[in-house]
Length: 429
Image (cartoon, rainbow, N blue to C red):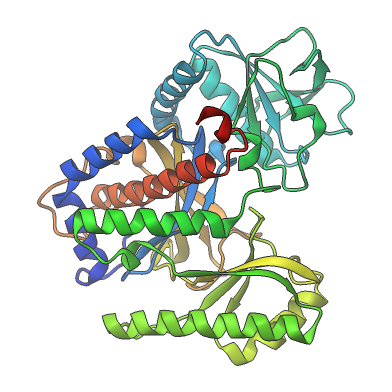
């Protein structure tokens, strides 16, 4: 089932699609050379928004969940990518331990763990799931809605290594973004590979740093294919530490929103875009969508903040690091519901994805909210098989190829980001 592409058959997005298809050999060579010099994150998911006049990533997750949304036809691609990733990191690997999020009561999330377990088992590894939550004191088997079951065991640390009972892994796969901080049990491990590295967690990672690097990647890529990098890049501004409980903090945020809104309006005017621009305010150090506010009019910012603070919605109750991002509309539809593509990658390969849809959200709102649903994207069948000669906007495989390119650009930016923030980097110089 492929979502209906409702974007116009003329305009910048379709010019971009045609340009990417025409430049495919140069694009693939460019990525190939980049991966010769840089190590991709172990796995990545990227939220993409298609506004009809621009296509841009709005979030990049280095600890992606939702792997259960990958359909059966996508699994061979994921397994091959897993084999390549493991072979590169630890060719002799036999045992892999998945460390999940501490919230393991959500059956949707548990199904995600079961899918990860399946992928790495088929890649030739013994896989166990070990929790670092203090609430998990003994092994527990949980039945899932599809008839499958999953066993969660408490993690044990012995002589600088972690594992579970009678299981000593050489590779640890984190599926926990550690937004509340890095626990000591994961630090200073002896001869074990921890993937992704701890400095990729939200305890140290910042969205503003990622999008600063993505901005540089997008400009280089824009020159490669001959397009304005704004067409693939959301303008952003780092707001820094702001205390929204004070008048000074609110004024600082208001001034920053006004500045960013003016920059976006200038680009809209340049391209003759009639849509209403908007700005999204987010926490700079959080992978969660909770606490986002959408600002359509600067004069409404005070009321929006008061509403957010009244509901206790983080990050708008006190001092926080904030990032402002150009809002990107989404004009994709699935059964009349607003949709946005999410691209899943492992190592340097696009392995699948899905449309996140929400029937009750507007085209300028965050879709990662209660009530959202997921429809698989046909990457496994079509992402690597574009259809040259088909008019722009009329071919789902061609559109999916474009999504995959944008996802890989964000993944490349994440690679640079991890290199630049690696606390051990000076040891390798």
